[in-house]
Length: 154
Image (cartoon, rainbow, N blue to C red):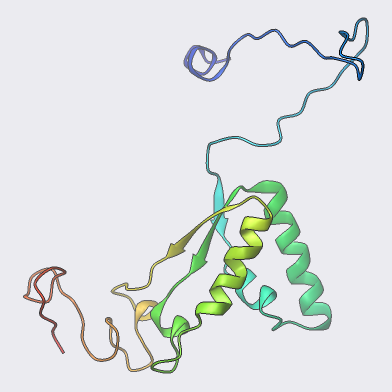
């Protein structure tokens, strides 16, 4: 084993296994399995939005459920989609509940969530009109529309 791993990620402990009557269990084989940890190991879980919102049927639903089950056995963190064009495909009608359904599902399955990103200088981050900031403007780091300036380019 790499010495740094042994030094920084392992420790020796003494564990006393108690029986129901609170006396130590002696001369028994036991198996210990880690079931959780603080390190966040995650994946893009975009498929959870349509799954948890009831968009799938039949075979497509079964496949999505299988993928979701695999996610929970492999990962403890999930990235959910917040691309503007999909999040608010029609002005004034954001898909808040759809994303919240996925976030609730993740929480129920002991997964930490984060969004990936609402505003992004890429076509996936634009609204239906191709704008990179809600409804007509965009922010640019070289111009007065940068966050905090109070101004937008349109």
